[in-house]
Length: 421
Image (cartoon, rainbow, N blue to C red):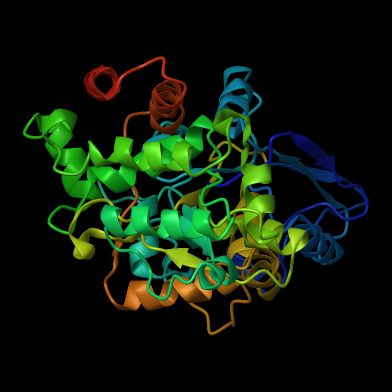
């Protein structure tokens, strides 16, 4: 993410910090866990999400209210969450519960993870395809999925209308024509967060796929050598896209970070950015009336290749060696399945929970994405199942391309070298 503040905020919530669960207990016999004889239990939680924090705090307050004597100390990590988590593990300060990206990143921590495979009462609460993102190579359920997230281009519908764009561009030629119309109307077409390498890294994955090969297929083919970046049908179109983003964007694109990017989109200062529906709450904070939607990314001359990317991206691991294992399990289940947990995800962040639910999702972007999901106009996420460090590493190569310090050929070669190494 997803998706992520540029600072690290450590919250030790005293009267309202997270622990256990009441109505969704996973303890033996179904009884909620709480401290006894006046003892204090502290649960250590590492959370990588930077959205919906107000709702998160309310969820925690409710949880603690139901668990007298329990205190949850939460580190909300933003941009550098992977490094911060790894540093804690290296220092043998492993949280009782921690969030990590699904796939490659999560697999690094399976040795510390509680195996949920026998907890069918918990597993069955989630959609099977979401649980599938939280398994190891043997099919063991090593974590619990958070939400469905959709990634792609976001566009400002009012600015498109102002420029006279009546149909969404589905090819790169059509995208260029849209940019010309926006410029003629005095509108900045792009505000890509090129300062944040991970944004460019995630953007690049659109151009690694088409409708003939999905995310899993690309990763498998790259791993066995049957596909290279040089021979990917749409990969060179990535550089044409970045050229458009430079030509019709800010004069200094590498000064635009994710927050500035989202601010410009929401406040009618730019028409297109690259981001996901996890940004809904921040976009709303900039302008709750912003008229925004997904633009399936044009990656070729084939309209059918234009997709958004959809996955259950983040997952929660419970430390199997936690001195408060049952409470840690309870807490993980609570934040993902309880009414308060769904309030955090569906109302606070505005995205679709991975748990089975009829709860209405308030996020306009998440609801907009449903039409593309239903139409099969999606593909999967490569960056979560790619080699570790993919987004930040390849994103730095693309930054060098945008500054003129690397050619398209050099960047393509470095993508390949990174993957092989």
